[in-house]
Length: 319
Image (cartoon, rainbow, N blue to C red; front, side, top):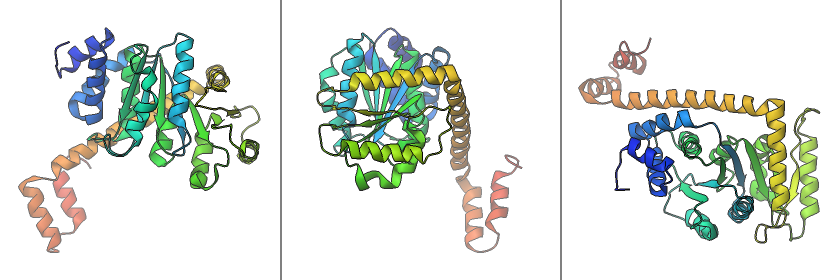
């Protein structure tokens, strides 16, 4: 379609299958502001059908290669899939983003696959808000299997992956010190563990390490126990079994009511984040102008305390 920035026109075209319009809508979401919010309003009524699978793990664990192999498996089942490759830094600097696209290049021309790299860019809410909005858009245009891959295991990446319906944590044999500090966070969000690059030495030792951590995690006896799946992403070995584990977790989550609870919790958290960010945006608008300058000078000159100055700035906005 002709180039436009109108969310309504772009959304109509995206539903009809125009990939360029989908990409532009995702760019609006990344930038945030009112156009991004409008995309969210359009997508919400048509969403709720997709199932999201998060993949996280230490850099170098082979997540992108494993994601590519997973895409191939889903396509062999004639399922359409969308992939969000999340990088909390720049969308253009460093090797991670371009690396994702290179590794998944085999699927780039497949109309049944949509791949998008995302970064915070100018989004006031950051990735924590942009990611669920992007997932909702892809859901609304008919992509009912969505893979969310994060580039690392920092707090941001773990939080994003943990917002998926099923979270896959990828480690390597002898995972060692690279993610020791993040073990607690990974254990908390993992629904399936993957020991990727399982053709290397140390697979059984890593399995025992994970099993021991699971034993110490005080999981309720009737709860889901994350399976540990060996894979070789470069050859696709173990990917079918991995996907079967994802489907088994989905069945458990649906039948036990955990999926509904998890999604309800995410909705409440997202609403809370939206409110907090909108208030933050309003605060940035308030903290400008002549009154702001005068009160700032008064605080600097110890003529007024900052709490009283803030009360004057806020006026009747908040009690």
